[in-house]
Length: 335
Image (tube, rainbow, N blue to C red; front, side, top):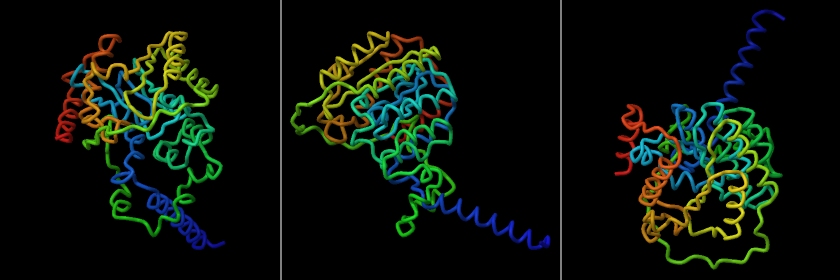
């Protein structure tokens, strides 16, 4: 084969690879202006890795806890590694990944996901994508994919998003082109601001559950989170964020309290502190009691910052130039 032919073949292959990569990037959702929850996981990678407190869990952490408020209140450097419907095996892998970048003093895990195991209807491709798509490739990402995939999903569709999103070609918007080569930060240290107000008017009737015991599978992953923290000399703190729905049954609460006591872990059911925190469910929620809005999250974050500072050996970083600039940007955003 002549040299010129070889060069031509190589160029064609290179062009094909570049086009394939470009199409993968173009067709994959950008999570910049719509479905912004899908961008939260990736924003952590761009942050300084000097956090003394890391939150892991579902929407009950990223909607309810503002690290910037915690910094202003007590000088705490915290980050929320939350995602929509983050299930417990996903939280475990995200924590493992986080510890490759930094070793916080405290890990705060919201226990709401203990109610869902891998047989739950809450395991869905839509939520999987919001947690997984924007993770960096690592052993932890591979494990999350393998543990989370539904029957209709394939591993290759995560490796090559075009296999999943090829049908989006006629649904592309200006967002897909605007953010083809850049990202948009939608959170402040993992906290997603929501200023809307939708107070509680009525709640669904509390239904009786046939089974209130957490599954062995969920306990297994909670054990893994506990061991990972102990092995790294990290204080694990379990919480239940204040919410009115879905209902957190007394049987759930008792199981977590027993687990915490048996394993020397602190557990705070913050639903019990609503009056002390000052939460008003007619004003401090954006969706009728599932999640707090900006005013509610500010109240909760101040309360929890004081709790952390009183009970754990955390540094007061107030005056840090990077965080002072972050705080300035945050205050402009919440105006």
